[in-house]
Length: 417
Image (cartoon, rainbow, N blue to C red; front, side, top):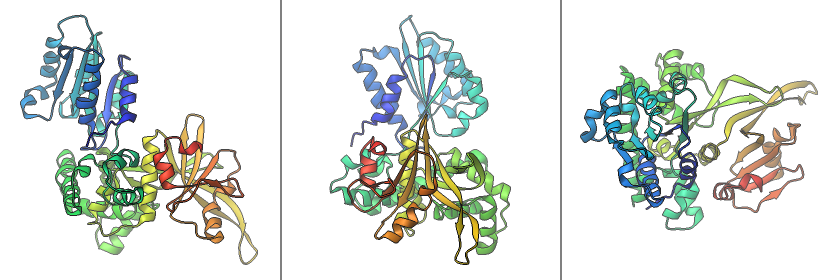
């Protein structure tokens, strides 16, 4: 199956020749190399670029092992630049090169070089390295397939496709496999032999058993508020394991560094400030999360919330968990301060949306529960509830937009409906 990855291709094409180093990041096996070496390379040829002016180097290929030395890589590239015409330099898995930032900064000094790199470790986009690029590094984050990208590969109706997507996720190679067993085995092996192996080698983990226990725990609490302290207490009380908060924090950062998980911070909507803890964790791909748990914990409510989070990130939104504080009168007649949660506060420039994920709203009581937080927000930004059930797009009496998840996922402008 050929995926056009239009979102990322548009970004690559619009950034062509802009004097920035284009840094393509994302979890391994999500299609970064395919994007750069197949789709973008094809685009360059179709726009009249001569093959001799496209320098392609896949640094995880054994034949290029000598080029993992920064100096050798730089002079190899420089020797291939023979004239004043524009050269397009495509480098795959640049983080494998020690001191690669010196290579990239040196390439910035070649006026007729336009450089594109991929990397699977967010550490190479750390603050220090971005500083070394002197503001001339432009990141394009690639995600696994969205539902709209996945759908054309599925033979069946949209409902069946969504169930498949919620179970096996959007890693491109999964779409090439036929049986559930093949898909399950692929995802399990990918988790164990690629991601966990990478982390263990990169950070020289001594206690892999504890690290694996943490992964299992985080996989079970997607969409739930937690923090290292709560996780530390969970290990003590339920597993009888002493794992320090500092170690847990390091392990969580490792999982974020390889793009397996992302965080959503809590944001006080009325106070207009962030609340440091607790926060939520989401998996970059729900199929990987399900595989990690042996496909035993298939809670559609949490998986749906995770998929909505991923879709919002793909669309370029900054996504937080909202908190609304308000005074309510209890059954005893006493007014007390209470916190209400908004699943997602999404910001992009001057735009903001408040979004609730609700598996179903069968009655007025459930509608009241889902709108409790939204109706207490006193600004004019749009408020939306996304439901699993198939339903037309409509507004309730409070002006809140209700839409089903397929409308949200399949229409690029769905938040504007």
